[in-house]
Amino acid sequence: MKIVIIGGTGLIGSNVTNKLRQLGHTVIAGSPSTGINALTGEGLSDALENADVVVDLSNSPSFEDGPAIQFFQTVGRNILSAERNAGVKHHVILSIVGTHLMEGMGYMRAKKIQEDLVKSSGLPYTIVRSTLFFWKF
Image (tube, rainbow, N blue to C red; front, top):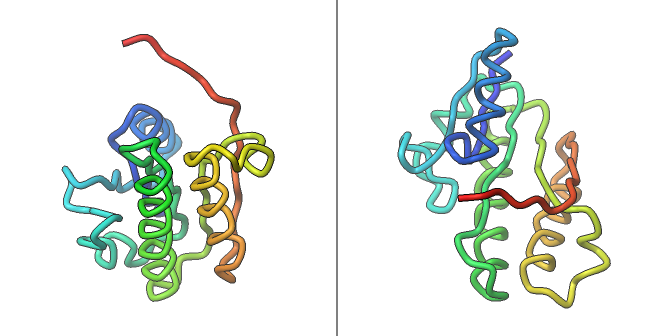
């Protein structure tokens, strides 16, 4: 199965990419550093050609209301449009438990907007909601 991971070189994405490759899938790790920029749309069409699944692990570089909302709206629309054009069969996003309960926080509102875009896209989807986690640098 061909799977494109948007955010595939990040902390979570690199681990998901490695696990899926170990299971024998063809995995494209999408990020600006690999020529796939979901924010600008650069490289999306080519990467999604013949893809079965897209896993969106993209993350806003800002937690501020306006930039986070703009990021998730733009990235979500770009990915979903490219998926429809390529005939992708399934869309997966990583979200956060309780986004609908914490819309007073800009980042959580942005994640809820991302979820709503996926729900209204008409594409088959899965939303994986995780609790917040922290890691040591």
